[in-house]
Amino acid sequence: MERAGNGFLLRFGALAAGLALLVAGAGGRAQDPDLPKKKAEKKAEPKTPANAEELKAELLEFNKAKTESAQRDALRAFVKDKARAKQGVTLAAKLQKAGKGTDRPFTFTGALLVGKAAHFVKDYDTAEYFYEFCAETATRLESGEKMLQAFDGLMDLYWDAKRYGDLADVCERFVEMKGPKEVDDARPFVLEKLVQAKAMQGNTDEALRISESLIQLTEGSWYFVQLKGWVLRQAGRYPAAIETYEESLTKLEAFRGIPREQKDRMKDRIRYSLSGLYVDNKDIDKAAAELQGLIKRHPDNPTYKNDLGFIWADHDVKLDEAETLVKEALDLDKKRQEKAVADGLIDEVKETSAYLDSMGWVLFKKKDYKGALPYLKKAAADEDEGDHLEIWDHLADCQLALGEKAAAIESWQRGLTFDDVSKRDVERRRRVIAKLKEQGVEPRVPPKRDVPPKRKID
Image (cartoon, rainbow, N blue to C red; front, side, top):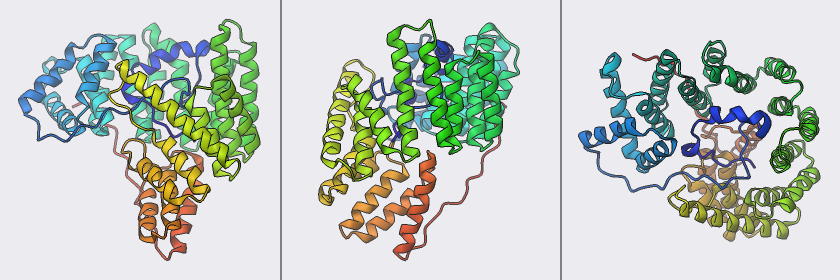
C-alpha cells in the first residue's frame, strides 16, 4: 500500500546522506521496509498559551545544539506539544524578521531547527522563510555542508506541500550554483529530485530526458535506471516501468564494489517497488510472489506481511491467510516500536494506521463488519497517518454495510478532502464520487488551492 509516514523528525541531512547511495542505496522516496516504523511524536495534551519569554528562551537554545543528535533531541522535545510548537515558530518568525543582518536572533543552526519545527507542524510559510534564510546564509559562508542541509530542507518542504513547480525551481537553482565540493558531489542527486518534480508535474518527456542523461553520466548505473522506472510508473506506463526496474536489478547484480549483504538489501528494495508495480499492472500473482520471496528472506518484517495480506484481501483471495499475515504484521510492528521506545527514538508505541486499515479491510472482506469497524475507525482517527482517501473509503464501505448510511456519507465526503498520494487514488476518487451519487448525495469537492508565491527573506 506504500502509505506509511516518512519519519520526518529523524530525517536529518537526507541529501548529504544520499551522496553514498550510488553504491549503497535506493533512489526516490519509497518507504524503507528494512527500518522500524518512525512514528510521529507523542501527542501531548494542549497547554495554555505559552509564556512568550519562556518560549523565546527555549527557541534561542536551538542555536546551541551543535551535534546532529543534540539537534534531533531539541527538535523532538520542542514539537511534542504541537499547539505550543505552532506558537513558537510564529514567535520565532516575528523575532527573526524584526532583526537585521547580524542582529537576527537565530544563527544558521537555530534557524534550521525552527524551519524543521515549522515544517513538522505544517506551517509551511514559516518553514520556507527559515529554510531560505539558511540557504542564503550557507551560500554566503560557502559552507557545502550547510548548503546541503538548507536546500534539502527546502526541497523536502516543497515536496510535502506538493509545490512541484517550486521544487523544480529550487533544484535548478542548486544545480546551477558553483560551490564547494559537497555541492558538486550532490548535483546528480538534486537532479534526481528535479526529475521527480518534473514527473509529478506531468512533464514525463523532460523527466525521462534528464533520467537518460544521468544514466549515461554514470555509465549505466543501476541507481538512475531505477529512477527512470519510477518516472515511468508515475506516468502510468506500468509494463515499461516493470521492464526498467528489472533492468535495474540486473545492473545492480553485476555492479562490483558493494558488499553482498548491502547489495541484497538494495535488491530487496527494488523488488518491493516491483511488487507495487505488479499491483498497478493488475498482475496480483506476480505481486504476491515478490512479497512472498521478501517474507521468506525477512520473516520479521511487518511491511511485507501487511502488504501481502492487504493485496490478497483486496482481491478476495486467501482471506484466512491474509488475516494471519496482517495480525503478524501488527504484532511485529508493536515489537519494533517497543524497541524504538527503549532506544529513545520515539516516545510511545502507537499502532500503525496502514496496518489497522489492512486488518479492518480483511475482516470486512470476510463479512465481519462489526469486527472490522473498530480497526477502520482507529486507522482513520490517526491524525498523522489517517488522512488518506483509501482509509476513509474503507471505513465508509463498512459503515454502509452496517446500515450507518449517514456516517458512511460523511466518511466519503471527508475522504474527498485529502490529497491524492498515488495514481491509484485518482481512480479511487472517481469511485467514491460515484458511490456518493448512488446515495443521492452531491460530493463536496474542495476548491483548488492557490499555491503561495515563493517567500524571500526580508
